[in-house]
Image (cartoon, rainbow, N blue to C red; front, side, top):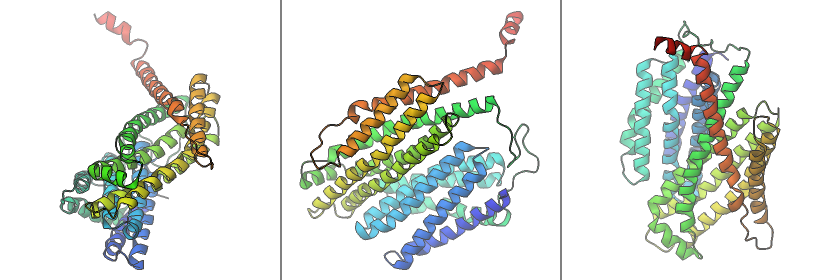
Length: 432
């Protein structure tokens, strides 16, 4: 599929999604409205896939970021329409605003890439960057209680209309003369050893930074907010939840970001171990992606709890509901950790097979995976399971994160040395 055809499809889906969500949200609560919102989510996901296919070779980081952001947006918009019936308007609004944050942040690098590739006019790419920045600001303000999101969303909404119309007419229109040294779009070239090393280095850096950011966000959200809200009874949980009202919303945003990072890390690790085995890296990536989907479903229960507190924070009627939603979040997340444990076991096996990975790193990663499996499966047995093995074995993830960052740093240093050349230092001495 050519860039022009791909761009025209993107433009058509952007415009159709705009119409479907506008009408569907106006018919909220009716079957036709729900159908249109779901159809909008399908087209949103399709936009992410099409852009990913166009950009994955020249700009893989931007392509993956946009694909995952659009996937998260599609999921959250669909979840919002479901939560509207089950938990109320507050939960639906939280889901919508988080979806807008995902869309906006994922589109910022896309606008920069489109300007760099000159696939759209420069003024339009700058307009899009500014519009999405305002959209993210407005959505974040709405989550914190400031009713300014609609006004700040106008520039981004107008951009999408112009962007969709332009793409529908001309598609992605790259310049006729390629940049010096840049490969032609769609042209395949043989991958050299240097290319493979560079790919592995970028993958290691992406996976390492992703794991680092995830550990910070998940720690703050889960241990700093959610765990503190869990009490021995429903009334105690609701009392704590009322005092952590805004913090719970921030925890939802942080955990949604963790879900997106989980997917990015999964496929970065797949790229890093691509030369170790043909099928196991792909299987491990899909296991972690599946875990991310289950985790996202679990987070919808936290969204429901936050929505209940927003709709009716002053009554005791919601005590049991909030407690039930937080309990459901923990139970579903625990089930998802089975897939996460399998993923780590597979990564440990790949690390053991890889000649560039120390054996002790592979062993610790595999032990971490076994710990998650033991805790998740143990929670399913009828007898009381009180041991938390993962609380001890999780160190394997930390080791993997540190080792990946070291690999990326060393590879960058080697590339810099090779660019300087063997005669760089003698030349400097002669000049002195």
